[in-house]
Image 1 (cartoon, helix red, strand yellow):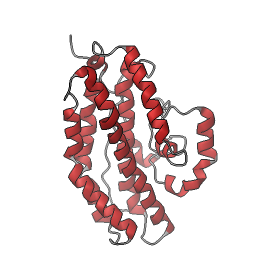
Image 2 (tube, one colour):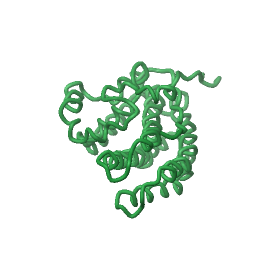
Image 3 (spheres, helix red, strand yellow):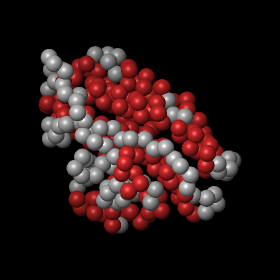
Image 4 (cartoon, one colour):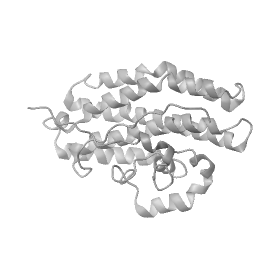
Length: 256
């Protein structure tokens, strides 16, 4: 396989998932790292597929899930999370984050166009072109994913929101996410690109009986897709991706 450049995950902020103020940045980093791992996996495994084979077809189907997750994540931010934060942080306070989404929109759209043509057969497989299409946007995307985290720091939220307000929104978002959930695809994707212990073994917060059903029963529906993740079904990172896994962040709250 030809040499490939992969990208480091974001550092994990200090804090506890049980503190609703600390949860916001912590969970956002976990979600952003899932995005990074998704594109790392496309870059890596693109070198192991050949056109007109079952593995190639499965790889393209998996690539569709990587694309979908990015759209899903940014859609939830712009439709739900950012408007909620602006109710107390001020109208337009999330505009830099939305601008960050726009910053890679054009090259990402070009990648999506190439992907669609590969799925339809209009374009022929070209490994160098596929990887270049990702490299054209992912440096800007990763920069945005890192910069956005400061928006959700505990010290940004305290004094503007009460814990009760944040918990109320958490409950609302849980219902929204569950309404969108596909048990035959979504938990599987999170497992194979998620943070393993000790960073994020609690995420996604799926009840153990459902997690068992996903891994032992529903997994087999698209098991040929899930071979391309950065982790196995138990969120254990594969050796080739281990050098890009996150470290703990060394960042303190600004002096008040």
